[in-house]
Image 1 (spheres, rainbow, N blue to C red):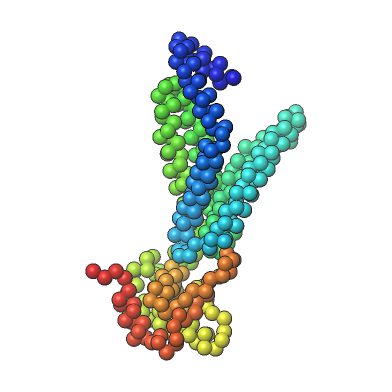
Image 2: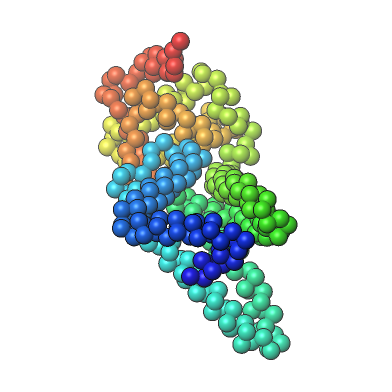
Length: 335
């Protein structure tokens, strides 16, 4: 009723047009009450939300070089948990903000506690956003991410996001006051700019988290890209990996993880008198190639905390150095 009165006052010079528009809106609302539009809308909203989360997970997996997404069972359980926990987090954070604000009003006359409570109220959005980003960087990639690696990137992303949100909100208020007509249209590109910048901030924090957890690879003297290594170097390293994996498999020992393979390769380099370290990115690339040529099989459990291990994919008698050379040399797209 309030909106109808406001709309009639807005179009007081054209009452017939106002009544026509209000009648159209009321007719649309009557149809939506039948349930079919509501059901379709809820399904479409659920589908778009799932696609959004799936795209975020895919982007994070690309940053972490994870080639295997969550299984269908884990996707359902993790996403449903997210849908339940996110509203609880929002309600608790909103209630906490209201409680702190009410407490501030009661303590406004207190000389010491008044400024302290004001400071914490102003700081609370930064803390909540930072905590949200830290949780996102730890739990969203389908790999094990250390909390210490995600802490400072999450805090930095939360601070940048809050500052940008303040600029965005103030810009929207300024534009809407500047011109009642064109200011409304200007909100659309500003909203798109907000989406783009928010996504850049989110990915920036994810990249920093990956760099923090693999910092030693970025401060070595080795090539930053795996394409900087020659084919012979990659062949020798691949054969070294196969030799150690086959030996463990023959002895009935636990299979290697990617981190253990990296340590093993570095130990071999030191044993031969070398001083350069093998970066984790190169190890992941070599393991991916060995899987593509069916020399290795990745053993992955359905738990995120479990680390993938690598086993021979064929009989050991077939996994010769000559066969490795032939398959690697033919790996890739042929013209």
